[in-house]
Image (cartoon, rainbow, N blue to C red; front, side):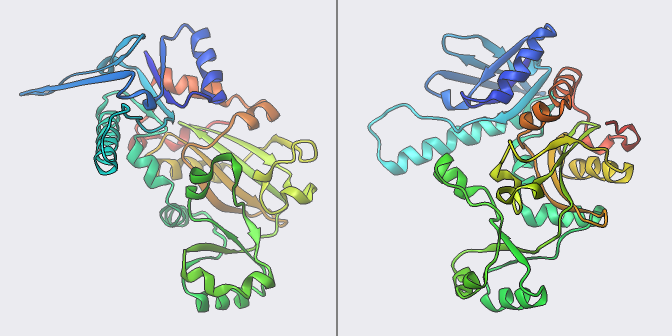
Length: 336
């Protein structure tokens, strides 16, 4: 059986669930927001270790978690508590305990977890950590500054002749505002430099602007690497950040990565302890691949629909056949 942990509205999960069902796989979709109001857990140990672990979904099945073939830790929401007359401090404590125990349980399962256990997903989202690992294994990075010191920002701005961009260190802003507001990568203007003192209040990532011939979204699924070109320079809307999306004016197509870049993509995912990752690159006018970031649980369905790359099928293979352990992965097996 496959367990898919995700929110109620998730077209990616819908699509993969349909494919898994078509292959005859048993699966259960569960949103941890249903815990503990509409679901219960039981975990027990004997003298030899973990003896049982079950998830009982009210008006649904009871799942033996020790018998699962795989878990897709897709986009689960945090537990939602019973509506009890308790003070805020007590409520916050109860919510934290529910979250902690569930996350603890996902880490203890003997089956593969895609893209990886929650602690490794969280670690892989850290920008300093992922840039450090990417550079160590051989990727080229854009010159980068993460600072709360105005003087350092001004020095960086002058060093790169004013050609720098800014972006946020995490997705915290989007998580707090939802779809109502987001802040994308943008060029730092001379007007904004006049407010350099503001970085004292909150850290910002600054990078030297890298000229783009095309942008590449690489999706790593186990040992398989799927690359797509995003021709973001063909429209002003997506020039600095393709996530602004201009589907009618921005061409997308499959891309063949150089073998060495493909191997490094798998290795980066390995180093982060994952078996899935969405990696963004710039290809410069002279053909260099410059690493930007990796999203350990990044969206991919839009790329699959635009290019025909069989990413969902690869995910089904991974969930049904078992995710490889990153420390023993064979890079020679990279396919496209």
